[in-house]
Length: 468
Image (cartoon, rainbow, N blue to C red; front, side):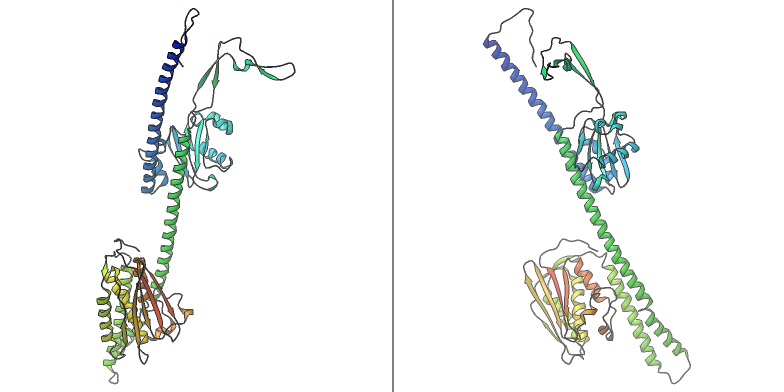
């Protein structure tokens, strides 16, 4: 406002009034621009700090620490003088915040205040009478970060003692007509009337509310990610316990059997009995020792896969499969299996691990078909979109589908497979390798009709990573 005064009546002509108006408009526009520019800079500063705050929350193990422990904290994204985060029963404050007991009482009020994503007021005492005795919390801005306001973030603004100066008592300008109707009369006195305003804070701006809401969304997203991570860890822990149980069973059962055999035959060797076939006893001891050694080797191989990184590269599947084929034909020379290899599209993965997968699956196919009159095994590859599918088909003993639900579990062997040598770890190793490569593994089988194993892997470069 620009106000000009003169001691005597003075008439201003139109041109003078026009010039005065123009000066007022220029000054007003300049002031308005400067105020808006400062406001925009402040709001941009708050938004940048919000982004920093979200990064801190993701980096910290503790949500409260990420929001309060650093230089950029909950007070860096608005004009509040204090703040509190209430999470999992614990309250953490920063700046000039009320005491913990009062904050818990306030949180109880917010639970009953209705379902709101953002609660704001610059006159808290009007809604929550105990605030009248707490000048640090005359105004609050609050957002929930859990259902029913069990957890939340609250910002505080202190009481702003204000004196409003009126040109005369504003209440006296309103009078009643004789008929009871309200009418406004011109004031006859313009003496300054001062009204004291108590228990009010500076008002919250729309930008402050918007930023608080945005922070709430980001915090909820982080909490959800943490919950998902915990759920994944729980699943992995459950799986580890199951594997530990299987391992304990194997140690107490599978290893105990060859150990007992070795012990018994060793005792027989110590006996001075000329009728004993010592050569046969020694062969049985060696065979059981080899079985124990193979079992220990497979267990070590399986557990090492959890920590071993993937070294992805393009794998020449034709060379790999034909090498495995030659090894199997040598090992099963008596069975004379027919090993047919079809198309061999490229796979991207770790050469050593992929070699283990196909050696296991092709070895099983030959082993479980070896008692057929004409064992036949087919390895067929097919490229499709961004993936390659390989199928290993045999005409072996097959499996009863009712016994295959735990086929990829540690040490599990179907009843029909127990007539063949094995540790029950091969398919568990295959499954873990395929999972590390983010691929798929499944099978089709029918008793006495053979089995088909399917492997689907990417046919494009993978990012080097380690997965458990």
